[in-house]
Length: 526
Ligand SMILES: [Zn+2]
Image (cartoon, rainbow, N blue to C red; front, side):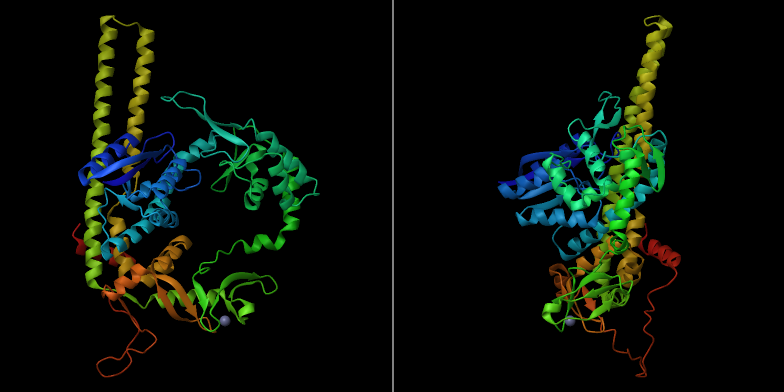
């Protein structure tokens, strides 16, 4: 019998926002039974945002079991239960695949056909897109929390998050970690003397027993981040604003300031180069010297470059701007066939419909719960009139019910605000497939990396920084082999019927986004 594990997650701390883990489990169990899988493990991560995979124990434990026991499948409700970030999505999927485990999102009937896989890669990018969108909507309620002095996340090293309320009425606060708090104070003191480097402190903090949240040695970057984190002075920063926190400080403003000055002196140039993220590291290669190209900041010139390995004779420095622009230009060669485009759109529409139905069902369930609460509230009023309860008991119970109803209302609002799969995503997919270069250039750094890694394993450059050749990923190769994707030779002037070079402009591409959106919607008939 085939085996499967189940993974569920609650999307937001405090509130449910989406299917309850129990319901997620139940649906997965039902699916497993129908498809003939034996469930060998059930995992859950509760109340943590999917934006970060750090510290998601349930997920990690599940991956370990899958690898150890060669489990056939890992079941989730939909891909955003796993990750709301394309990079995470792929690394988790890869981890699972290493052990021969297939990740199956039961509400997204994706299969291993090329267009199914292709859609899945696009959706992984789109999940990251929701996360940003959702982020904006949630921000408002988070700002409120901040103004009340509550840091809306997990406390950094030296603090713990504890619930001082009950399960029904949680009161989550951040307190000083009894084991690590004083050790953090000590590290700040040591650094402020300017007698220790950050590397020294890495060793010292290890020897005094200071550990990260997952019990590991604090690495250099974490320690840096710690020394720069204003949280330790009793304040915190959220979206650029500074707030006074309710948590206890672990260092004084004077010591903290001293640490900042020391760090500034030590890292004047390091800070500047951190602005750069290297889009092409791991992807870019020099064709002439068969050497990997790496991004680097040349402070002498005040510019960023990609350069090869001097040991291989590759001494050329290629300007970062030129190289990255040429990659965007290269993408223009990719043309998705109508067949692939239509199939992907069909699949996407199917998903949108399903996603809408599921969301409606969830909202319906909560509405029913509200009705029941209201019945209770009415009964309570009757009890007061009958004289079966006194005024005090009435007030208390009435208040409790009001809170519960309010919570349900909040849940509905959250659900309605949640992106989910909607028409915007389909429109996004359509425009991506119609003009990959334009969409790529508009995309965020993460999405750019995602698109590139979806297509290429390696990009080969000549000495002028032009892309001369590319190695495709297996999926992309498969799509090319089956004529789902065509690669144009754009560097050759195209000839029109009079054998005259025509414009490079692709007439099917409109520059005005609004127009293409409207047309896409009309064509899709949604
Ligand atoms: Zn070279």
